[in-house]
Length: 164
Image (tube, rainbow, N blue to C red; front, side, top):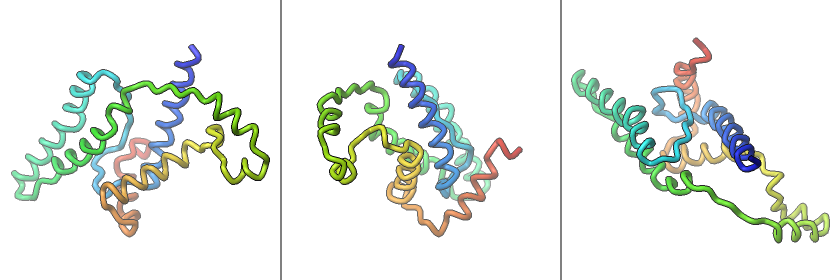
């Protein structure tokens, strides 16, 4: 029971932080409002991925080709899949770390060392972590530049269902 409550708290805290961080640092190439779906079963994930990502990318590229424009959605889809695939096993697995020794070590530090070498997990700001992580993905993995952020934010707001 404690485990499922903790998982739900981390899941919802992370989910809310993720959406907020997308508002601050949206991708230049967003074409719908982001959401987070937690799926552990690989078969179900593959089915959801097909209908939510692959099929729309194929349809939009088909429309772009028919209208004489350059297709781009499958390229974006492949980039997202590559990023997701790199961490898929970590995302689908439970990880239990026993931290009794680490907690004990932290209590033995003097106040100056606690400040200098803070490894207290309780002090991690989930929202700030997710914001920095999403910025890093946008900047380093997707090679998007800060100068494009105002345009990307304006585009993001077009897809925000809360503004309807």
